[in-house]
Length: 226
Length: 371
Image 1 (tube, rainbow over the protein chains, first blue to last red):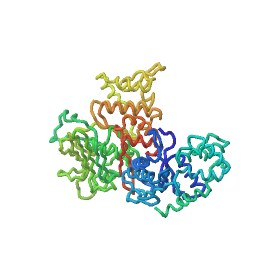
Image 2 (image 1 turned 60 degrees about the vertical axis):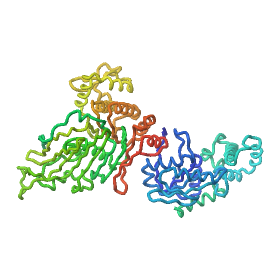
Image 3 (image 1 turned 135 degrees about the vertical axis):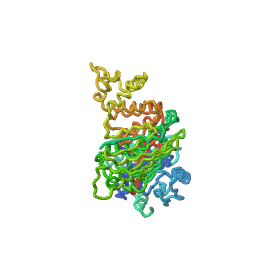
Image 4 (image 1 turned 180 degrees about the vertical axis):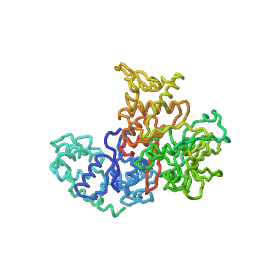
């Protein structure tokens, strides 16, 4: 059982992402870029079911619509954000099926388009990165490459010498980001992507990097979609 | 004010076998024009029903609706007024003043439309109650009435019950010189008990229930269950005439259960009611009151254990997250026995929404606010 305060939906928009790392990223991005404060960022918790992430988007939507008074009363639009990973079409299809699985919700036919249905929140899907394949870590890795440029060559050498060398882009992005954050975070070398946001700014991924502009712009203009 | 009763002789008492026949669980409920409810329906109510919602959303009103329909007398409506802390009934010969005392039973105070409360259970069990104003063919005029106008009879508020036999049983609240008078009716009441948050427990009633069990040598089941959860309790019995006392370790004398712990006493009372030798329903408003948080899992375990054994259904409202978490802990293993009824006011309209025990567990695990 969770032992911390339960959540309520006190904002009109939900940004539904895959996990806690993503939530912390989007919370920080919205805060640091001074984006629309109408977003409430949440994700399907692993809990006692043992699985979280986007394969639980449908369960999450269905459960909240069934049990949460504040969800039904306040939520007008939901932005579902998911990684493209190594196969963009397959990933989008999976997210679409998850929304279909949630009883009654409108299902977008394409990403970044609004699906509307009376009595339900409007649903929009955003697949990231917006300009290629990969995941959130792939984007963040670009920002770390700018901040810690001198580490990239040694990192490439290191990756080439490890089993990660054969991994796909998404998995390798996670490994590369994790390694970079650990190697630069003197305050907490065992930090994670999710937790490094609590470290001093000099250890953090710079959210003002232009690689985040497309996502930030999309969030800033979300009102025009819904 | 006095309340007198007269038996309607044309309505025979039913055989006890009929009363006890079948499984009296409420599966579905329909309420119309009662308090905040215009029209609400519930289906598939399980054994343990947790009622959640904001203040003034209809939680207590829902319990009251079940309580009224479970009984067999308009007198229950007077009890509800007392429990709600409303002024005592005053007897008036004026229709307007008379109706004014009952208007809050009706949705939007609309007394032109009847109240209807129906529920159906397994084994074909059903009960309905209609509350409306029905003119009488014989007019009772209060002799003390001195209004200076032509005397007119009060059109009384009338309770029309329909039971399993599909017959109507009618009783009205007539104004007489000696107070309100209502006919006793031969419809056997369902065993329903209301634990209101403002209703004091009657020590004698529970001591009597315990004595009844003791005579049947069945009291040990409850005592053992309590000892299992609260190890410091050694024994429970009726002492000093008609009060429940407990033997407690490290104490030389027995102590009144209510003095030992208000929470344990409340739990004991609930279990005694569930353990009565008949099926029924227990209605508990704000169940968490009086219970320390770490008692709550034990309480749900015991309530479920006894409710299953005695085929009793529980409807309990709560504002407590800890209470819901404790219920969810028990529901993890027996989710089909639990359900949640959420009382909601949407655009001024009171609604009852349901979800099952599995959703309760999911919601607690996920950290969703469901109170």
